[in-house]
Image (cartoon, rainbow, N blue to C red; front, side):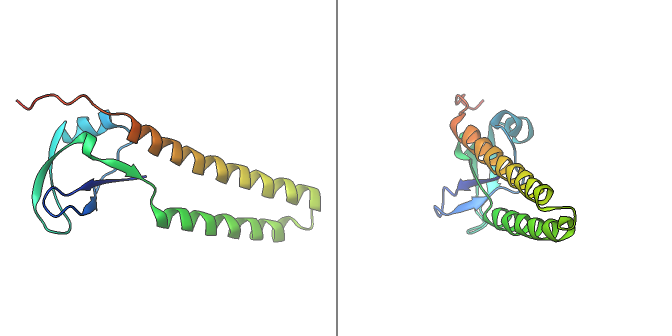
Length: 123
């Protein structure tokens, strides 16, 4: 899960360097209002934690799928001598674990984006 913000100057989206699972965790580290430089125009602007949105990192998903397929192929070759039933069970287990991890990440993104902090006036 990565976090992005839209620049107030050039209107381009850019990624925050650190990731947070919740907005309160983000407030603890950065504060409710935080200044951050845009990676496109290098202008530093002030943002509220609600301005950040979470999204799934595309490369991580592709790497996860490739790794899952490689693990299935290697495990099938390694466990083929034991029997087909154990190989099928092992592969199905890996698929279930991989699917649950992906669903968990999607759930974290949905929860982060749906939870908003009440904006307090700056002091």
